[in-house]
Amino acid sequence: MIVSVVLNAALDVSYEVAGVVWDGPNEVPTPRHRAAGRGVTVARVLHTFGHEVSAAGLAGGATGELIRSDLASFGVPTDFTRTDRESRRIIWVRDTKRGTTACLREPAPYITTEELGRFAGDYRRLVKDATAVVLSGSLAAGLPPDIYATLATYAADAGVPVVLNARGPALRFGVARRPALVIPDIESLGNAPPRVSELIEAGVGAVVVPYADGILAVSRGGQWQAHGVRLPSALDQGALVAGLVPGLLLGWSWPDRLRHALALAGAADAFGSIDIAGYERYMAGVAVEPT
Image (cartoon, rainbow, N blue to C red):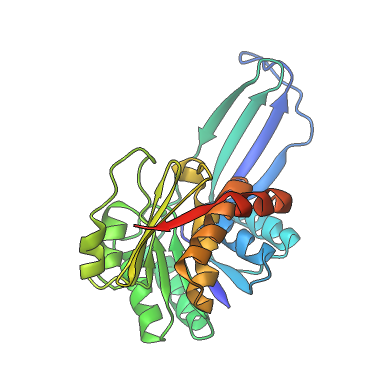
């Protein structure tokens, strides 16, 4: 079982109105609720391709129940630790008449020390039966910046490989635990990549860096670049992260890993739903070369 950790789960709430009235009431057809967050997307994609996966992390209140319910309707098992505070919501108001969209983001909930302790116990139980752990996405308020490093250490103690997708302090602390694969979460795809050679020297198994028009993979065995599919925004890279997990577990060649991951990134929406026909089309168009 692959454990996808979601430490700042969200619920996307979409309203569509033909001509939004900002200073008065609006009649809204049935709103759409979708579980969101990088780790949620990872879990959806892996489930779609037949991998045994569980979304684990933190979820609270009525919003947390809706997050669990949406993932259950998709067939993704969940093992969230309950928190007292409501999980965050991301509210989209789409004006179908004007073609405009407003996004309202609620703050991340504050996680207490007691809640973090309960989650740590739940996580260590899950890791015992895991084949891999994916640590990706933002952190809820109150969580220490080295939380991913701690979770990576628990996985290492159980002999479970870790895929780390993070940035800033969470990336810096996590890398010190020598995960099997690191995908730096850069602010925007136009930014300069981190110093990959330093990550490899620090003991990381391999590093995959996303760019606007492809990805670069670096391991001790060589370097490869894949292109042919333009990646979505940095916020929507969950499918790319998920696409790199099977190759790690099954020992695929790097060209096969990158081709699969890049095609998935192009064929997935922001929630992890896959256009299978699009995936097959992208697979045929991805080019991979050693560098």
